[in-house]
Image (cartoon, rainbow, N blue to C red; front, side):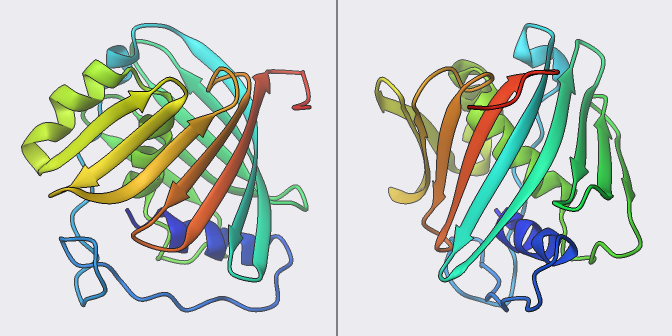
Length: 197
C-alpha cells in the first residue's frame, strides 16, 4: 500500500514546500527495500452499482497535512478517478476497465504516485466486503468488518489499515488509517455538485 507516498507527493503540488521521505515497505508491510506488490484491482462491475461522487481528501502524516479533491465515477464498464490539487490544477486521471489501467498525469506528479495503490485504497474503503474478500484472499490479506462502521485489512494477523465510517462511505465521512505507514486520510464524499459538510 504505497498510497501514502503518492498523496504526500501530490500535496507538494498543492503548495507544500517539503516532501517527506518515507521508507518503502517489504512484502510483509515492514520497512525494507521492496515496496511490495499491490493488491489485485477489482473490476468496476464488481461494485454492483453506478456511482459518481466528489471527495475532499485531507491527509495527515506527522506534522504535515494536505488536501486534494477527487471525482470518482464508476459504472459496469469503467472506474475513473480525477484528482485536482488544492490550487485547482489537475494532477491525474485514472481509468480502469477491469483489464487495463490508463493513467494520465501532470508532468509535475512524481513517479512515486502509484495508481494501483491509490485505487487499492479507494476499493478498500468503498467496495462491498464479499467482493474484496474473494479478490484479495489469494494475495495473503484478510479484509474484515469486526463491528459495524469498521473495516480492517490484515496480513498474517498484522493490522495494515483500518477504515472507520461515520456515515455512508460514498456520501459521508470516512477515516482511513494506515499502520504499515503512519498515515491518516479523512474523506468527505458527496454527490456531484454538493459540498461535503
